[in-house]
View 1 (cartoon, one colour):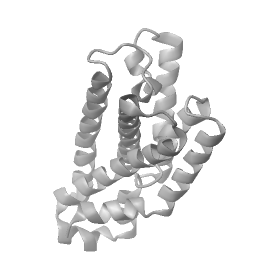
View 2 (cartoon, helix red, strand yellow):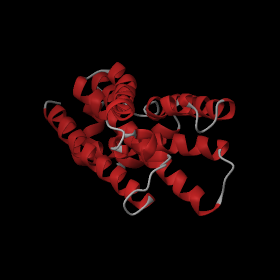
View 3 (cartoon, helix red, strand yellow):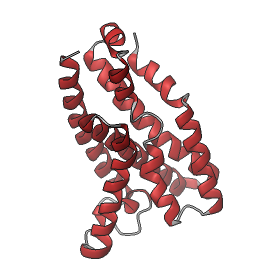
View 4 (cartoon, one colour):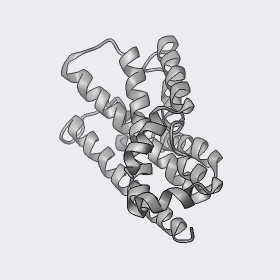
Length: 207
């Protein structure tokens, strides 16, 4: 069984994905890309599509039937990638609706938005798996996002790399330019992936 393909279909076909996409489009239409409302929505709506999928399978007992068909590693990677891609895809699709610019800058902006959404989606999934709580999935990423905003705005103005808004709408000069932001986001996603894999591996051992 192709776990990744199954998870992708479940993630993009979920009610949560469609609801999150609609809400984000409305936010961009009414408030705009640079609004505080959009900033707040990034970690929240990116976590909607698939960050609690593992908990659903685990708590319902469905994992006992599903896991033997695909294998542990395939199962974990499928959940992680589908969560990240659907979270990043939701934001990117909404921004395609809301952004009117084009050209190379548009490509980079969409890539940064996608990676930012992917990051917050997998952060939410990892926090939820660690705490075994759906509420942590939807609120944990937002709390971490807001903490980083406070740290940057009140205490560490020179460390703009800590500012999550800078990750999808950079205003400072980064080493390697936007490529530097991409490398930072990709590195954090991979690091979170290691934690996610270890958490689920330990949980699955008892299934």
